[in-house]
Image (cartoon, rainbow, N blue to C red; front, side):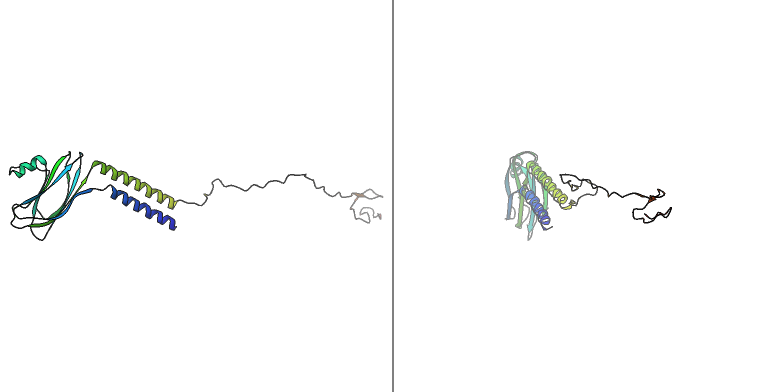
Length: 214
Protein backbone atom coordinates (compact mmCIF):
# COMPACT_ATOMS: atom_id res chain seq x y z
CA UNK A 1 0.00 0.00 0.00
CA UNK A 2 2.83 2.44 0.85
CA UNK A 3 4.42 1.86 -2.55
CA UNK A 4 1.16 2.85 -4.27
CA UNK A 5 0.90 6.05 -2.22
CA UNK A 6 4.52 6.96 -3.04
CA UNK A 7 3.88 6.31 -6.73
CA UNK A 8 0.82 8.57 -6.71
CA UNK A 9 2.72 11.38 -4.95
CA UNK A 10 5.61 11.06 -7.42
CA UNK A 11 3.17 11.35 -10.35
CA UNK A 12 1.58 14.51 -8.92
CA UNK A 13 4.98 16.10 -8.31
CA UNK A 14 6.06 15.21 -11.87
CA UNK A 15 2.92 16.86 -13.25
CA UNK A 16 3.59 20.06 -11.28
CA UNK A 17 7.23 20.19 -12.38
CA UNK A 18 6.27 19.62 -16.03
CA UNK A 19 3.73 22.45 -15.95
CA UNK A 20 6.25 24.78 -14.29
CA UNK A 21 8.91 23.98 -16.88
CA UNK A 22 6.73 25.22 -19.74
CA UNK A 23 5.14 28.16 -17.91
CA UNK A 24 5.44 31.79 -18.98
CA UNK A 25 8.93 33.37 -18.93
CA UNK A 26 9.45 36.62 -17.04
CA UNK A 27 11.13 39.29 -19.18
CA UNK A 28 10.61 42.20 -16.77
CA UNK A 29 10.59 41.86 -13.00
CA UNK A 30 11.56 45.09 -11.30
CA UNK A 31 10.75 47.43 -8.43
CA UNK A 32 11.29 51.07 -9.29
CA UNK A 33 10.33 54.67 -8.67
CA UNK A 34 8.77 56.75 -11.41
CA UNK A 35 9.50 60.40 -10.71
CA UNK A 36 6.83 63.09 -10.76
CA UNK A 37 6.06 64.67 -14.14
CA UNK A 38 8.00 61.94 -15.98
CA UNK A 39 7.64 58.47 -17.40
CA UNK A 40 9.57 55.23 -17.78
CA UNK A 41 9.43 52.72 -20.61
CA UNK A 42 10.61 49.15 -21.14
CA UNK A 43 11.59 47.76 -24.52
CA UNK A 44 10.53 44.25 -25.61
CA UNK A 45 11.57 42.42 -28.77
CA UNK A 46 8.86 39.84 -29.50
CA UNK A 47 10.25 37.21 -31.86
CA UNK A 48 7.23 34.98 -32.60
CA UNK A 49 3.67 35.59 -33.73
CA UNK A 50 0.61 35.07 -31.53
CA UNK A 51 2.38 35.77 -28.28
CA UNK A 52 0.66 36.89 -25.12
CA UNK A 53 2.23 39.02 -22.42
CA UNK A 54 0.94 39.01 -18.86
CA UNK A 55 1.33 42.39 -17.20
CA UNK A 56 1.25 42.68 -13.41
CA UNK A 57 1.38 46.10 -11.71
CA UNK A 58 1.51 46.93 -8.00
CA UNK A 59 1.83 50.53 -6.80
CA UNK A 60 3.21 51.17 -3.29
CA UNK A 61 2.89 54.04 -0.84
CA UNK A 62 1.12 56.78 -2.78
CA UNK A 63 0.09 57.81 -6.23
CA UNK A 64 -1.37 56.14 -9.28
CA UNK A 65 -0.01 55.74 -12.79
CA UNK A 66 -1.07 55.28 -16.40
CA UNK A 67 0.19 52.09 -18.05
CA UNK A 68 0.25 51.46 -21.78
CA UNK A 69 1.61 48.88 -24.25
CA UNK A 70 2.35 49.96 -27.82
CA UNK A 71 4.46 48.94 -30.78
CA UNK A 72 7.66 50.78 -31.70
CA UNK A 73 6.14 53.10 -34.30
CA UNK A 74 3.34 54.31 -32.05
CA UNK A 75 5.74 54.64 -29.13
CA UNK A 76 7.78 57.26 -30.98
CA UNK A 77 4.58 59.00 -32.05
CA UNK A 78 3.52 59.15 -28.38
CA UNK A 79 6.97 60.42 -27.28
CA UNK A 80 6.71 63.25 -29.81
CA UNK A 81 3.47 64.37 -28.15
CA UNK A 82 1.03 63.12 -30.78
CA UNK A 83 -1.87 60.71 -30.32
CA UNK A 84 -0.79 57.11 -30.70
CA UNK A 85 -2.58 53.78 -31.01
CA UNK A 86 -1.98 51.36 -28.15
CA UNK A 87 -2.61 47.67 -27.57
CA UNK A 88 -3.42 48.30 -23.92
CA UNK A 89 -3.91 51.30 -21.65
CA UNK A 90 -5.11 51.76 -18.06
CA UNK A 91 -5.43 55.21 -16.51
CA UNK A 92 -4.81 55.94 -12.84
CA UNK A 93 -3.84 52.34 -12.20
CA UNK A 94 -3.04 51.29 -8.64
CA UNK A 95 -2.69 47.53 -9.18
CA UNK A 96 -3.85 44.80 -11.53
CA UNK A 97 -3.04 41.73 -13.64
CA UNK A 98 -3.73 41.79 -17.38
CA UNK A 99 -3.30 39.43 -20.35
CA UNK A 100 -2.47 41.26 -23.57
CA UNK A 101 -2.52 39.52 -26.99
CA UNK A 102 0.05 41.10 -29.31
CA UNK A 103 -0.68 38.90 -32.32
CA UNK A 104 2.40 39.65 -34.41
CA UNK A 105 6.14 39.66 -33.88
CA UNK A 106 7.87 43.00 -33.47
CA UNK A 107 9.24 45.60 -31.06
CA UNK A 108 6.99 46.77 -28.25
CA UNK A 109 7.20 49.16 -25.31
CA UNK A 110 5.59 49.08 -21.88
CA UNK A 111 5.11 52.70 -20.77
CA UNK A 112 4.67 53.84 -17.16
CA UNK A 113 3.37 57.40 -17.43
CA UNK A 114 3.49 59.64 -14.33
CA UNK A 115 3.66 62.92 -16.21
CA UNK A 116 0.37 64.25 -14.76
CA UNK A 117 1.36 63.77 -11.11
CA UNK A 118 3.44 65.92 -8.76
CA UNK A 119 4.32 62.87 -6.64
CA UNK A 120 6.76 60.07 -7.36
CA UNK A 121 5.29 56.56 -7.56
CA UNK A 122 6.89 53.52 -5.95
CA UNK A 123 5.84 50.41 -7.80
CA UNK A 124 6.65 46.94 -9.04
CA UNK A 125 6.15 45.71 -12.59
CA UNK A 126 6.26 42.11 -13.80
CA UNK A 127 5.88 41.21 -17.48
CA UNK A 128 5.76 37.54 -18.51
CA UNK A 129 5.57 36.22 -22.03
CA UNK A 130 3.85 33.09 -23.30
CA UNK A 131 4.30 31.80 -26.85
CA UNK A 132 1.98 29.45 -28.73
CA UNK A 133 4.68 26.79 -28.30
CA UNK A 134 4.49 27.22 -24.56
CA UNK A 135 0.73 26.78 -24.66
CA UNK A 136 1.09 23.56 -26.68
CA UNK A 137 3.76 22.37 -24.26
CA UNK A 138 1.51 23.06 -21.29
CA UNK A 139 -1.34 21.15 -22.95
CA UNK A 140 0.91 18.17 -23.76
CA UNK A 141 2.35 18.19 -20.24
CA UNK A 142 -1.14 18.28 -18.76
CA UNK A 143 -2.29 15.36 -20.93
CA UNK A 144 0.78 13.29 -20.04
CA UNK A 145 0.33 14.06 -16.37
CA UNK A 146 -3.38 13.22 -16.50
CA UNK A 147 -2.62 9.94 -18.24
CA UNK A 148 -0.06 9.08 -15.57
CA UNK A 149 -2.56 9.83 -12.79
CA UNK A 150 -5.23 7.68 -14.48
CA UNK A 151 -2.72 4.84 -14.83
CA UNK A 152 -1.80 5.06 -11.16
CA UNK A 153 -5.46 5.12 -10.10
CA UNK A 154 -6.25 2.06 -12.24
CA UNK A 155 -3.17 0.28 -10.87
CA UNK A 156 -4.19 1.05 -7.29
CA UNK A 157 -7.81 -0.05 -7.70
CA UNK A 158 -7.46 -3.15 -9.82
CA UNK A 159 -8.60 -6.46 -8.26
CA UNK A 160 -5.83 -8.99 -7.92
CA UNK A 161 -8.09 -11.83 -6.64
CA UNK A 162 -9.08 -14.58 -9.13
CA UNK A 163 -12.45 -14.03 -10.73
CA UNK A 164 -15.25 -16.50 -10.06
CA UNK A 165 -16.13 -18.46 -13.16
CA UNK A 166 -12.89 -17.70 -14.90
CA UNK A 167 -10.29 -20.11 -16.11
CA UNK A 168 -8.91 -21.88 -13.06
CA UNK A 169 -6.02 -24.29 -13.34
CA UNK A 170 -7.22 -27.58 -11.84
CA UNK A 171 -4.44 -29.87 -10.60
CA UNK A 172 -4.18 -32.99 -12.70
CA UNK A 173 -3.64 -36.38 -11.05
CA UNK A 174 -1.77 -38.79 -13.25
CA UNK A 175 -2.52 -42.51 -13.12
CA UNK A 176 0.66 -44.39 -12.22
CA UNK A 177 1.89 -46.39 -15.13
CA UNK A 178 2.58 -50.12 -14.75
CA UNK A 179 0.83 -53.50 -14.61
CA UNK A 180 -2.87 -53.38 -13.73
CA UNK A 181 -4.25 -56.37 -11.83
CA UNK A 182 -7.92 -57.29 -11.57
CA UNK A 183 -9.09 -58.32 -8.13
CA UNK A 184 -11.11 -61.55 -8.36
CA UNK A 185 -14.21 -62.01 -6.26
CA UNK A 186 -14.08 -65.04 -3.87
CA UNK A 187 -16.02 -68.05 -5.15
CA UNK A 188 -18.90 -69.23 -3.00
CA UNK A 189 -19.46 -73.03 -2.92
CA UNK A 190 -22.99 -74.18 -3.82
CA UNK A 191 -24.30 -77.20 -1.82
CA UNK A 192 -27.25 -79.50 -2.53
CA UNK A 193 -29.04 -82.09 -0.34
CA UNK A 194 -27.99 -85.65 -1.21
CA UNK A 195 -31.46 -86.96 -0.37
CA UNK A 196 -33.92 -84.57 -1.98
CA UNK A 197 -31.60 -82.34 -4.08
CA UNK A 198 -32.63 -79.09 -2.41
CA UNK A 199 -30.19 -76.15 -2.48
CA UNK A 200 -28.45 -75.70 0.84
CA UNK A 201 -26.36 -73.01 2.53
CA UNK A 202 -22.68 -73.84 2.62
CA UNK A 203 -22.70 -74.27 6.38
CA UNK A 204 -26.01 -76.22 6.61
CA UNK A 205 -25.87 -79.42 8.74
CA UNK A 206 -29.42 -80.59 8.03
CA UNK A 207 -31.53 -80.16 4.89
CA UNK A 208 -34.32 -77.72 5.63
CA UNK A 209 -36.58 -79.60 3.22
CA UNK A 210 -36.26 -83.26 4.22
CA UNK A 211 -34.24 -83.01 7.41
CA UNK A 212 -31.54 -85.37 6.22
CA UNK A 213 -28.16 -84.83 7.93
CA UNK A 214 -25.54 -83.67 5.56
